[in-house]
Length: 269
Length: 288
Picture: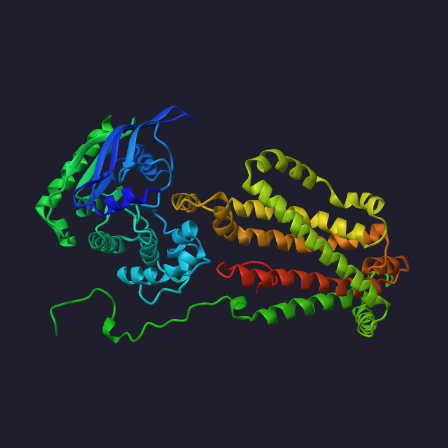
């Protein structure tokens, strides 16, 4: 819509604010439930932020507002200097299920966002880029395979490519690997970290797993329910790049325990 | 020799491979054609027995042989382009036109009902109401409106076949999951794009289920139309044969007619396999 602004921001230096939420609240008119109360949050370029909290803490509502799928009742949501008032091209999103369409090959699924926005011709031009992305996620050779023939982990890798094809400024990840077994999940998390670093992506992850949040994030937003609000934003100062064996260090354990404590407190309320 | 003692009887080292035979149910080892032939033979055998013992009057139930002879007679008539071929062609036309009409109307109504809130709220209740009516009872109306030609039969055939297609299409459009809808929203897809690129392909298996039920209904509609509205089709031949108590003829005509029904069903199944290649159906005749 406003390419000048977007360009200026995509070139933003690492650490510059990219996504800004100020005093965001959401009350569902249907049942007058306050799902989200006064959430303020800034995502910085190239950072990895996780949000964690028990069910009903407003994580999903927050994510939907950030994705431009639903409007907030109060507050301001600004991505790359442009207010978020609907779905945006510079937002990439990933869900718990890979949601690949079985009538399209891996590559056709990956270029689908381009096809929707710019038509079939543009999608055709993006095929080469889709091939490169598949290579990045380790799916070289699976370009023309249908999703039925992919394992759960492979399908999620392909859906990462679909998210990245539009070069979004921010990646919204809704428990992307929680349907996978633990081994694949750890592996995919490390993969995700690598991809985020390579693409210098700004990521926002919703998760139920404290370990997952700590191993991936620079900052963890701990939320508490009824009404959904931020309890505390915890900084994770483990060195980068993170490795799986860091999960056995005392430092890691400390942070996990601290967050668990915050979440337990939230439960009492 | 050793100070270690096992409390199990014997030394397990002496046991060789523990390969044992897993029991397989007899029917699992029998190929489908053999199982089907078995049922066929039992059926024909019982039929033969019933007629041989004259448990029922030959006027009511002909012998298998009489039926076969008549089938050969009818078959010759069909192959040599006799009057029966003309009748069959009329019925086939009714089936084809009726099915085409049912697909066009059923699919359009299905999209209206499945995609728009107006259709779901305002149109669906009427469709449900009409669907619960005995549709065959409309046959005299169609004859009164459209005459004794093939039009009234086409109308009844289409009328019966339309509803399952409406239901299949509407159900199909509702079958896309929440994530897929959200994904299309985040991609900024228009309503039309969401319908054509996501909801319709997702719902195709249900659409085809509706088409298959419709394919069966269209045959029933055409023949019922001929029974009640006259004309020159195969249904009329059956009616005349029945009124003459020519039961072997009735039987053989029905068998030939069932071939037409099978062909329509098979055509739908074949199209489904080509179009919905990603969806493997497990149950259903003609899919084997």
